[in-house]
Every structure is written in C-alpha cells, then in structure tokens.
Image (cartoon, rainbow, N blue to C red; front, top):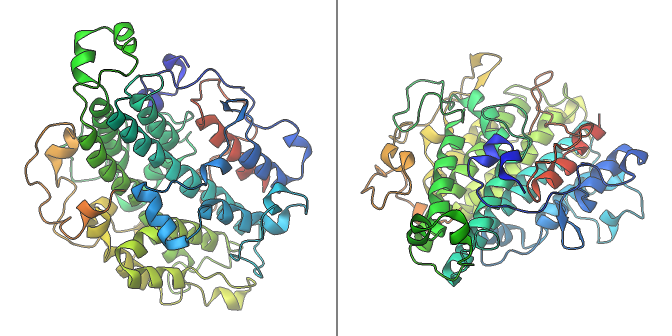
Amino acid sequence: MDRARLAPEVREVVHTPIAPPSPTDVRPRGARDRPLPRRFWAAYSEGGNSVKGEGFRTVRGFSKSLAGEAAYDEYFAYHQNDKYADDYVRAALWDRLADDSSAKADPRPALFDGTTLTDAMAKQIAMKGAVYQNTWIYALHELYSAIGKCESGNIADETGAPHAWDEGWAFYAGSLQTPAGSSGVLSYRLADKRCGNFQTCNSDEPAKTWRAANDEQNSNVNAKLLNLYHAGLEAVRSSTASEAMDESEYRRLDGHDASGTDCAAAADLTAEILAQMTVPLIQGTLRYAWRSDPNGGGQTFSSDGEVLAEYHAFAYAVLPRVAHCDAAAGEVLAASMAIPDELTEASAATVVPGGFAAVKAALESTYACLGITCADVGGPLIHDGAPVAGMEACDDGSTVNSRAEFFQNPGAADHGDEHEGEHEDGHDEHEGEEHDDHDGHDHGDVVAEEESDGAASAGVAALAAALAGAAMFA
C-alpha cells in the first residue's frame, strides 16, 4: 500500500506497506439487496474490502482467543468466553436476523434473551460493540504481536514487528480519520468526541506543557497515544541498522538483525497505550450513565432507549477492566447496566439502579489500578453547554501536565520518578464512532453510502464496511 495514499492520521505512524491495495467497495457483494439489519451483519461477518489470503479480513474475525495477551486475558477472565465480543453483537441482532443467518450457527447468547430491544437500541449496541470491543481489542493484539516478533528477532518492515505495530495504530485510528476531524469511525474519533464533553481537548485550559498548541490531535488521549506509538515503533525497529542504512538497504536485512531494538520498552509502552485507550470508554460510560439515569438526564424513554443502549455498550466495553481491578466496583457497574425486558415509561424510571453517582464512584475507585488519573478523564461533564452537577472531576492530585516529560517524549531512556503517586496502586501490574450528535445522541459515523478512497490499510477498510450498519438501521 502506498503510504502517501493513507489518511493523514494513519500516515502519522505507518511507515511500512501494510498490504496490497484492497477492493474499494465497502460493502460485500449483494449487501444492498438485503434487509437493513442483515446488511450490517453481512458487512461485519463477511467483509469484502480487506483481502487476507484467499478471503477477506472481517471485524467478526477479530473476536477470538488471544490468550497470553494482557488486555485480552482480563476480558476472558471476566467473560470466560473467547468470543465475548462477537456474542455481544450477535445478541443485539438476533431477533432481527433470519433463522439461516450465520449469526445463528452457534447457540443464542444469554445476553438480551427475553429482552425486547428497540431498533435504536439494537443499532447502538451492535455498532458500538463492533468498534469498542472487536476492533479495540484487536488494535492491542497487533501491539502484543509486534512485541513477540521483536523478541524473536523478526524486525523486517513488511512482515515483522514494525508492520504489526503499524497495524495497531491503523486499527485504532482508521483510514477515514483526518487530523482533529470528524470523519473517522473508530476509537480515535471517540477520544476526540469525548474530550469535548469532559474538557480534555487541547483547546481546554490549562495549557499543556507536553504538547504543541497546533498538534492537530485535538484530545489529550490521542496526543498521548500518537507519541506512545511513535516511541513504540522506534523501540521495535533496529535503530543501529536503520540509522546506518537507507530504507531499501534496511529492508534487505529481512529481520535478521535486531540490534538496537528495545522490546521491553515496547511492552511498557503498550501498557501505557492500554491505559489511555481506556479513558474514552470511561468517559462514555460516565456520560451515558448520567443521561440514562432518571435522576440525571432522564433521557432513556424519550430517546426510545437509545441513550441506555449507549450506556450499556460503553459500560460493557470497560467492565472487565474495572472488575479486574476491583470486583466490588465491577459488580456496581454490572448492576447499573441492566436493560428492562421491555422499555416503557415506567421501566425507564428504574434504569441505572443506584444512580450515576454510584457508577462514578465505582469507576473512580479503579483509576490508579487502570493506570489513569482524574485529570486524564477530566470534568465536569458538559451537557448542552453547561456543567452537570455531580459529574465534577475527581481529585487525586493529578493535573493535565502530570508526567509531562514522559508524554512529550515517551521514547527517552529514563524519565525518572514522574508518576507523582497517581499510579501507585497497580499501574505496573496491568499491561492495557460515532457521528456528530443528533438530537443529543451519538449515532456513529456512517460510511454505508460511500466508496472507499482506496487508501485504507489492511483491515481498517473492513471496519468501515462493518460500520456501514450504522446507517442500515436508520
């Protein structure tokens, strides 16, 4: 793939040809002729845009055993199910798919069995599940894969550790993402949306000493992640070889000279990346807990259950990480996510039992273990231009400039003791959309009616294909 044709945010990190050009149609053949929910399932399960071997890479295929990888192991420990992410999407769509659908080749997931989901709810759960579970974990998988290849000495650009590391960023950012823009559909875009709700954008006060005012990353999360990814890429490349040779000579090494790599540093950086990737999931959980709560925003019934479904999707995506840190906090979060068997005005008044304040307290109790800070998450929550009472930022002594030297240059050999205490309780132990709001709801970026620009890296365009389903419920 010609690096010059990739979207700017992918080009920021990508330096290797990730894959040959893939088909430009974001939809699998015949998708337009299928009923709406089936189009989503076809794109999600069949692909059609990213060639892999003799078939296509699919978003559904990202849900599988990744045993031995720290982030996946947390999720498996909670769900006890290799395909927890796929089961989430299948559960959301089950009642809307034909009996002969490939979704029903395996038994019906227990989740949502006996629950009547509105179309708005099914759409949000399926769409956000595909992005914030399937794709989110697979982006991290590529980093763990890069570490393994680095440790085995495979540092060839086109097949080794640098290639895998590049794919991690590609699956996080996506090929449709533009600098600080609204065109993306994956987790990068989520971070930029949530920073506007929690005052964690570059434009928010106070000024950040570790980033430029015009770095075009918008959210603090994405600015940190891009720096972490750059540092990790250098760690898995052979610095001594790459500095002495031009690119063509370096590639002819074919991965046989790993002098200059720092695989252990890449592993440490992956833990930092996992922590930062968790922040937008926390922010989304907090925002939609308040919006769903009848004693908060109280929007569950008026939105036809949409905001409650969004709360469920965000909370479910972060729940195993929370439970890994504190079982009691996980129980509070799990109980608060319950969806009534049928949405009525009366049942909507019972959602988020315990209230958004209990959800906030449970999440905040795990921040140190998750490797994040109160300043990372930010606050107060802003809704309709005004701060929300009860959703102020917590205080753990951190600021937006905590560990500034590290985040400005994560690849430096030694930053000293910069943690200022905010990560003391477990950070070292734990290695790891949306469309513009419409009527106050996040609907997910839609690419169903667009053709791929042909510049998508391997797999990323397949994600765009799956997200075509966002429009297919409309």
